[in-house]
Image 1 (spheres, rainbow, N blue to C red):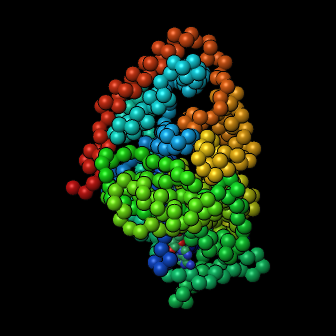
Image 2: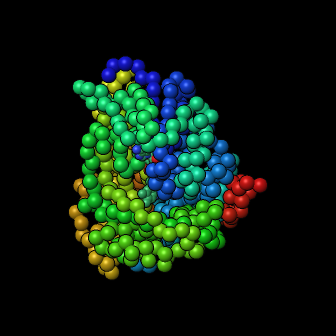
Image 3: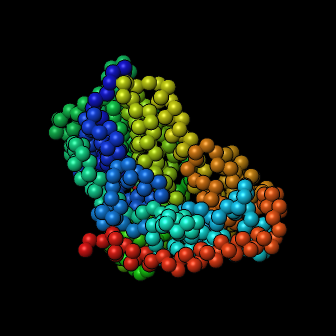
Length: 500
Ligand code: FAD
């Protein structure tokens, strides 16, 4: 198909559809016709309320004002995820955003901490992180870069928001930028004879919408990428066996916590995401080990406030589409695959798919080499995030449930095994290429879930034990003092992110 593209059709108006439309409308600057087709009858999945810090880059590119965005989406701030009962029953740790301590010479900070911990002379790891200590104190402010060398400049954050309000907010922004919205249910997809490229979609009322490039944001069904093009799905449920979620909002309680909580249960785990007007909750579980009724009872028994609706069931299979880009169809969002939200990665995967599409934008037609590279990068990204999520399940010492015992005993991907082996030997985490989660992210989960470790980086011993002790204490002391000046999260949200 060697012809310039003109018409871009985005199938689906959930988070993926409207994020794609917003980014393309902004970056392509009116050079292409962009249309979003969505069905009010089908609706959106409506969950997806926690994010990771990269979303700030998306908002900046699209030109979103943070305070307005928070107001419109009933948002709160997120400094990390607190994990409860993951290693052993009763364990609790925080995977906070941003750095740990201050690096000294060439050896990462955590290596000095590791040595002292092995000697029984270090405070818990979280005390060396400004975001984790602020989160624990329910405090929040954006980074302040004006105080030189201060941990206050190291605050890294993301957002919690209402997914339905986010889609509505982006839609308004897109329509102001020339994106056309068509409401209607697609009942037919027309393909070109010969090569099977998608030519048009046809709505229930007979309207035919033709396009050159189609972005499939139709959710789990994958209307174009799977139902039409039969691209195929790589099923990862042997590693990530949870296959259902029950979601329910409940009334807000105080304090307004600036973090997501993930609490593991007998056969899965429960999320808790505080918003301005309610708390979003959901129980992700494996139907082989617990019935839907029992899973609903567990969810309802573990809410902080009164439920505001009946639990809603969502079924899923973890895995990825074998090709995210097939012919003239690029799948974005749930149409491209699903990884459960332990680390809030799905919205990020939408964002990075859009970035990749921009990198390989098929302005003058479709090129197999570009498509293959797009798919290679997409596969790499999915697989590395998958490994990180498997880590949470696999690295547990729970003996109280068959589900957790099976997760601890399961075979894991070689790539993950390699990471665990490197960590066990000397506490090293090696980040391959530009995989999403940093060394600091891995270390917090490895440490938080009691990963076996036998040593630390040998160059740590170049410093004397006394110097290391003094250095760790000074970092901890400065962080403690900084947390004192950070405002309360609820007060910050009330001042900056609520309608007057
Ligand atoms: P959807 O929201 O399902 O949208 C599909 C769109 O396609 C709709 O507009 C629909 O009307 C349209 N459509 C479908 N078929 C047709 C048709 N025939 N004709 C016309 N229109 C059609 N992500 C995070 O980042 N953080 C989280 O905390 C998080 N939590 C999650 C929890 C659960 C249980 C699940 C399942 C997902 C979670 N996610 C999370 C993922 C997140 O919800 C999705 O990535 C995000 O909502 C994007 O969804 P989507 O736009 O791809 O699909």
